[in-house]
Length: 73
Image (tube, rainbow, N blue to C red; front, side):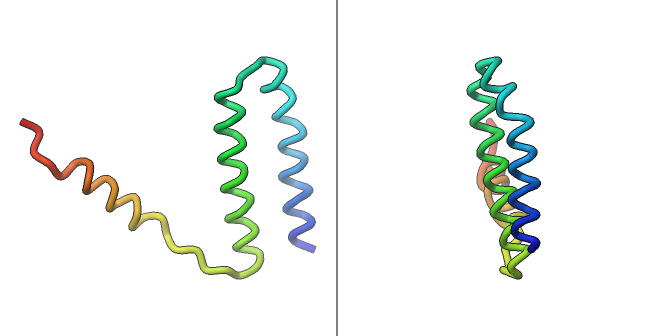
């Protein structure tokens, strides 16, 4: 039941947002919207089904440490 609700909510949001982006030919924004909506949908689906998703904080910390730990001479 919750999965159907998730699909309906995401479908409604997409139905309201995407036509305007297409009409204005905002292809970059449409790609960003689609990617973020897909990530959000998948994470919400995992949460509904009880799948443990690791925290992204460790990955983000690793990336920033790698990028900014060097000496900037």
